[in-house]
Image: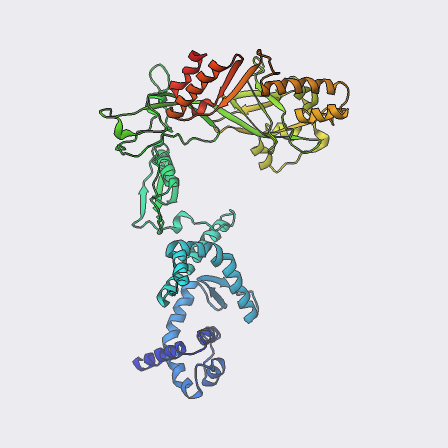
Length: 561
């Protein structure tokens, strides 16, 4: 047996030394597999004809016995582990392909399978994982510089690619077997919990639910996600498994911001039934006495409009090292309103009705807030609080030229873009009806995105509510009925509004739009306010974006007025 084993290893050594790469080795393994399944004996003539470049006729008699002695037990064990009995099987890049019903396969079929495996699994998802693990970019830079990866590095990448593709394939097959979508995804049971893993055992009914996350501990996403995982674990009792997957290439300091999660998933109340959230929901940052300038910012959903209501210091430019004996800097933020966003489309022209004025209100207060439809995708946004609102056209040119349109499919979806598009529904023009207002429901704190349809009234298809278009229509005699007179009135009023009135007219109002953030720019803004008021005899109206103003500045303009 020892002699046959040495002969077998000599056969493999002979194969490795061949100038034909591993083609001979592949054919030899295929020959052994076919012979073992068919129960046929290997003869010197068969081996010499199958692998002529590796063996001579004189060597085949001794090599057959040695190779069969070494390979046969491993071949049988491999077939048992793969579940392969009498059917032929193909293992490509670590993935077992069942070829029982494939019929006769030739070299073209195997080449096609190899190409498919590479493009569908190895090239995109598998290679991406390997690139993250071994630093492919660094290897390519080294190759460009004249260096070449060693044979050991090539072997490591090949093994990693095979393991990555096999793991992805297992996840996809498990999802397909469970009736889900066939995706390249990991399942919790596919990831072992090793040294870079943290497990939090669940409690109560939530213990049956397991939440698995894979995060880079030095990323922004990890700082945002970890507090949420902790909140779900504490409030719902979920079993949480966290896998730490740090990046192996760091070219700069990864942590430039520090996050704290504020909202608690378990509301608390006092004896009178009042919420204790204003007192308990807070973020505490400690040990931040550094000479760098810091900024306190609330990372809130896009639909939230937040205002800073209490702050003694400039939250945009904090130098904690210069505070002296003061140990704590505090600020209070308030959710002022939510945003209703959406897009508006002219049914007739299939273009956004640029400049269309919208009103949001209720039956008791029809005009709570207003906005204009923009030319960019017909976008609009309105401030609102949770509740039921009516969206309508403003009196004047908007309601005189346009009318709102709705359809049963839109009404069923509540004009929600997400619900309507998610149902893949289409609007039948024959089902459109006029509507005085559109009912909008703000049912949660994620805001609302709605789809609004408008159409010009009969006979006013050529009338535009834009001032420059109306000027052209007035000059060219376009328009129907009294559209030209209405256009002239609107043109004049808006032109005076922007220019400050006719020359010499001191009764017109001058509008000044300003944006300032931070105490330094707010001081410049106060100087500008005082300078403008001292140098003009007209009425001046200043417009500020309240979201960016500090609480100290908000009380100043009324006093200056």
